[in-house]
Image (cartoon, rainbow over all chains, first blue to last red; front, top):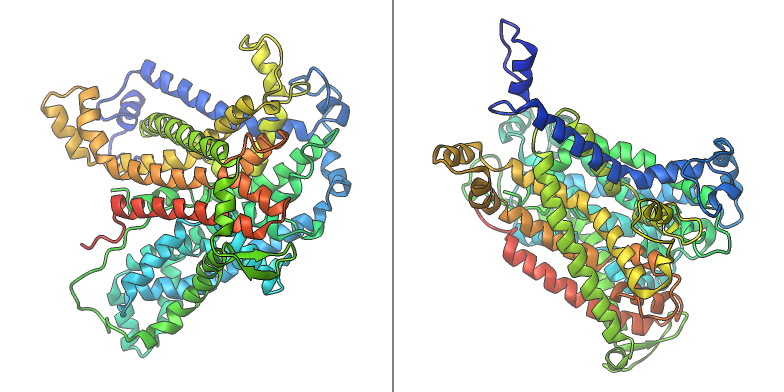
Length: 302
Length: 309
């Protein structure tokens, strides 16, 4: 991604340097200008919905329901919306936020706890049924809670944990496990075995080798797994919609749908809470952007 | 859109290294918890769902009696089913094909160097990270006939004579849902194809140039064949994701009464939530699940994630 020019003793003229950086044979400034223009259009297309969200979250109620709408609010920006939205009557938003946080954090922790040893082990050792095990992991990666919601709902009813955080923690963990396992597996596999052997000669057990020798080296893989699981649990909708029936227990994704279809929806609050929910995950996702590509190339994309 | 990297398992055949073969018992403490979670929360509910589809179940979830294939007979005799299947088919085909074409263009563009490219890539990632429910909500609001800002924009640029209630009738609500579906599917697809493009060896490109092939010729005879794997992965994962998508259609077509704008997934959730018919919902889910398994089978066959090297 980053094209680093080889270090040179003499500083080349800026133009030449630019040509070196932006094309193997150098490209004309006009072409570069065209690319930048297309880039700007792409940015506008992908960000406009979120800009509408942001501006909308700062509008007054009459402004956001105004017919015809104005592109920019004229009663000033209502930063106070971000304080008053928490007591909106449609849904107990503070509880929804807490619920979303708890479910996502614990699902991520559970995934980490369960997937890390398995990823290390499958990358290092052979055992009967290893191929079958990894195949099972791949197949679950293709499944989503929505496909099995009818079964999950009934299972949680019978286990008497329907409508609890525990149910959603288990579901989010189980369905994100395979991605986390796979990405960490590929990172562990990239560490030379000799490092393990050296530590074992010093008398360290397997667990100690994993924690003291391997974990410090694979942290980018772990961070990727953590962020991906967290974001995906944070956004989960289908299973929560059916399983979490109490208003206080519902995650934000489900709670927000209650605003829609009302006589006069408080869109400014819908967008305020959306901004609060979206900005952190965008930042998290941007942090692993390069590794998302890396993970993809390490997979079947060859 | 949560599914990501399609992994390839490569088992090294040659031995060597440290104790490289354990017994199953030695492996269990390491992989057992994963198995427990997969069996307990993925495979068990799948089996339980299949079992439930052959039972009569009360609204409280109590198992009343076995009814054989009666629930499936009810499902297949359902007058709504043909329409629901047609909608599902149109929804998947249109969203996936348009997504793949647009993503291919976008990936090629993002593979070219220009200042600010990282910024553009970051912008493309946003709909992938953001909650699909929240993204869809903005479109739903924006397309409102009275106060929708996208609607009035379409009038301002002359595409519409007057604002239109897109979410109020079946065809336009489905159309709007398709647009949102494409919008949220492009990031994952673009990144997959971008990764594929970056894996195209540069000496192959140089060789083509030496042979005097023009850029178009090079693209079709060198780059596209190299992209086949990435394209196969992108198409199959998109088919699964789009087929199983609930929030987009549920929100965009939510104000349409009846089932004329439903896909299999939104239909299942209506039966599950509003009719509280767990048995019928299970039977429908089993039909849905069978389609998913079929797609997974095609994936395994085409992408060959288990290939040995």
